[in-house]
Image (spheres, rainbow, N blue to C red):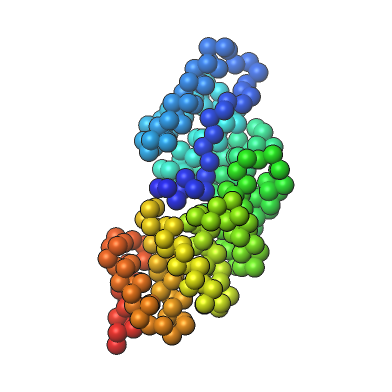
Length: 251
């Protein structure tokens, strides 16, 4: 779940609401918003969603409520509803970079990478936004998925300027090298990612590190990485693929 928090941003500052909103409803919506954010940060996503929906009933045009409601749906794996509410947030406030960044990421998750690239590129022009690494990371991921590997690499390098320990940036940077057949750079970068991603239990750099070593003809290193995938991440996304490749190497 830490990986998810690395790419989306929760915001608690209440922005503009309906012009006819009563003071009581405004105060209640603000309280519910803060409560919902706290629940999301604690990982209590079902109750966070319930709380955010209550806040929306009181103040449906508030951009921050819509943004956080979009995040709550994201954490409940409802990307369709997440996109819907993030679009409402951006419609309510077109200069709301936080929501634009989150929307771009959701669009990429839904395979709408061209649109994601367009809006994230625009968001990157907001020099007042305090979390530029999130935008460059999300833009890079959208470009990577759109097979724009050179452009994606630039965004991941930009992200790493804000912190070399960024697990996702290191992982995807390594994968851009792999996709462009620079297997030596891929293995070196993915090895760094392995260390940075261990705390978040993200197995992807382990697996692609093994693939890079395999392409370099370094079968012992590849086998070692694949064994780590099967042992450390026994329930991971790449476990079965790692087992299959291990069998191929050992024949």
